[in-house]
Length: 126
Image 1 (cartoon, rainbow, N blue to C red):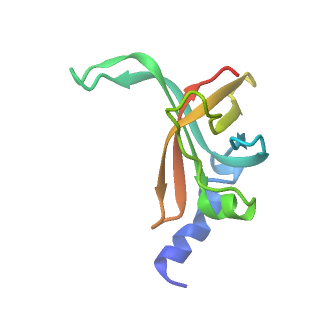
Image 2: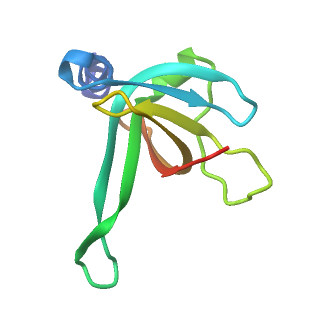
């Protein structure tokens, strides 16, 4: 097994195993099909202001999933949309206290070298 294949296989433990930080999330495509995954997530309240380089209050949330898990679930790579007339990809995830939050995918960064996609999220109300 080459290093890339070995690294992708290791993602099962690093990303999808709850004992190493994996966290349950539900991904819903624009057609309404939902699948439960375990991935790496964050939802923090500090962001960097690109104009000043200073930390400011804001919200930065992401979810990282294995591409192979998306393929096994017959889902494509989520994409953000700026067209408000189209339904977005959505993510539902609970915080450490069990409070669920709903997000839409505003941008995704697939890394086909290692086999992951990081979705950048924004709060969403249907």
